[in-house]
Length: 42
Image 1 (cartoon, rainbow, N blue to C red):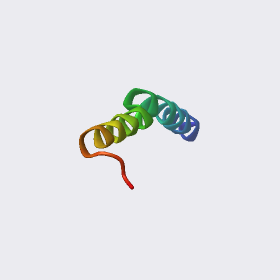
Image 2 (image 1 turned 30 degrees about the horizontal axis):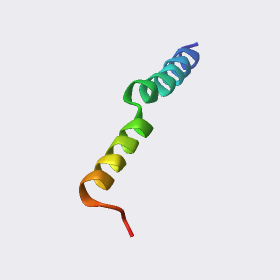
Image 3 (image 1 turned 180 degrees about the horizontal axis):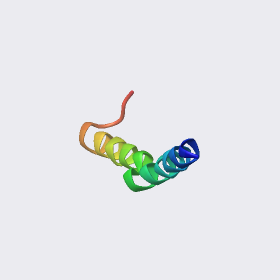
Image 4 (image 1 turned 60 degrees about the vertical axis):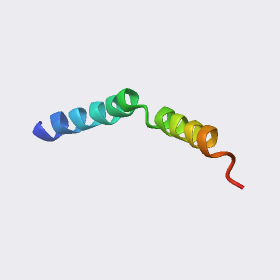
């Protein structure tokens, strides 16, 4: 029974944290800043 609770908590955290942290949006913002301030990467 404890394993089921731990699995449920891990599954909820795995879904919740990326939604809160929004890693893809942060990566996009960082990339836009790099292009804006340093020019294109060619």
